[in-house]
Length: 166
View 1 (cartoon, helix red, strand yellow):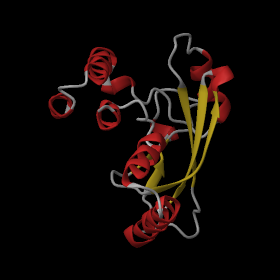
View 2 (cartoon, helix red, strand yellow):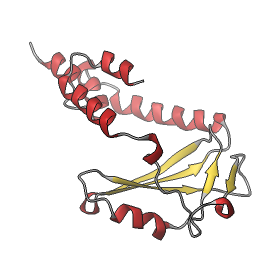
View 3 (spheres, rainbow, N blue to C red):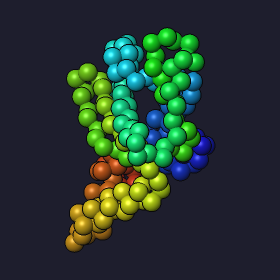
View 4 (cartoon, rainbow, N blue to C red):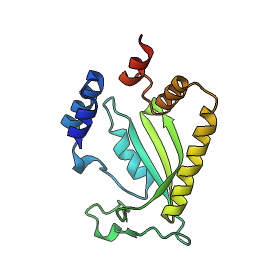
């Protein structure tokens, strides 16, 4: 996957550096160091975050009466007694309810809720696309592009700069 990213951004040295840093520092076995139903336990791991990275606390809300999402409480099988771990099946769908950024504590809390089926998920995506289209309506294509890049956090993107330069 990284080779595809490197090929796509081959002319963007800034992004290539970010890809290299990610490649050197990422370890899949530490991507989710702690999964627990106890927020205080998760925060113990976050407090140990002494580098410049932003920790993410994922809060997942499950409506146990009306969900088709397959999940299991695997606490009794955990090597850590007080972990209270929940395991979700691959392909589980979640809707982002909120993103709360608290950069003073280098913390970002993302609240998700389970989505019952792909139709519901498609409906949510369709609603977001309509909102984006209405927001961009009437703008010149260049302004539309800059708005999209800004939303993606790519405002300083090489591609955007290339369009602005004569």
